[in-house]
Length: 404
Image 1 (tube, rainbow, N blue to C red):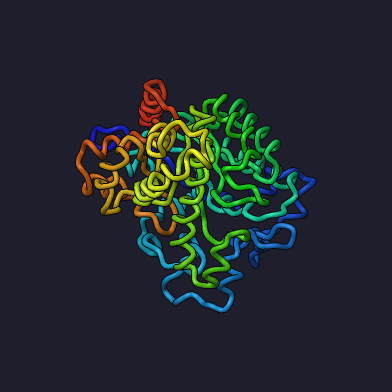
Image 2: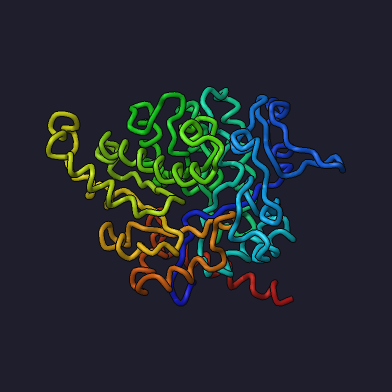
């Protein structure tokens, strides 16, 4: 708990081990994935290449730029980016433990997190391209999901995970969702908000996936990144990651929300829970107002199936995350409701404010607003009293072992 308030981290990240594919990827696909090799012959962190193409185009688009001395620290920083965490020492405990499950729990304790839902780091970009072999897409998803499931077993009542889905074939995505929820205990899934192989989020192509999330009573999370091969931001902004990082996280989320609201996804799937993660959320009221501005002119002719206003759909089906320090959180909460907001520590990423995310929120808003936001992730993922009781018991059980 954080100052007596329950706290669900809706989007906490892990750092995948460099041997993940060696141990978990189906042998049929292993020769299609390569990682950097160090002088000792062992795999190291760095650019992953799949079928001859890098999984992130950050290094490609920035190939003529060089990092400034003293800024980049490879253990903590993303390519050619400065960092709030790099060189601060705040992640030394995790680096020393190679970001293992014990370090994850330590990070949770430092922030006061009861339950964290885990998301990948390099896994965010693994499938981020058009035209990928759907069976390779599935194999990569299965490898990550099997690994993160085992990672969570260190303390499964405190650590949950969102399943990676192969977006290149909706039927394979549905099959993997069922497997992860029913066999591995996933509490939902994540996809990037980008258009994949010509299919955007208002398309009927995705209806089976929406329906399955409803039937299984699990959450769909949108989580963007930067440098994806299929991102239009590469075309617009080129090598400068500053432009692309700002634009991709906000604008791709806005377009996904527009598509789902006007496309009637929440009309036809009224129990679907959707999270818009790691993109702040002050854009949400403006997007809702913009859609409602056009609502009287276009609803009858272009979207006659809509029975609620965009704001009503959002306040029934959606949550949007903050990271604690945004100055407009209280104002945004007054417009969309603090209960439609959740919070992400974004641990251990380069732009996270860990371990001060919760403290920043408490310094930024009223305690009532903070309590609602800390609990937002519980509503997003449908965590109840039983989940919190088990998480608290897990903490209690770990104390004698820690004291020995």
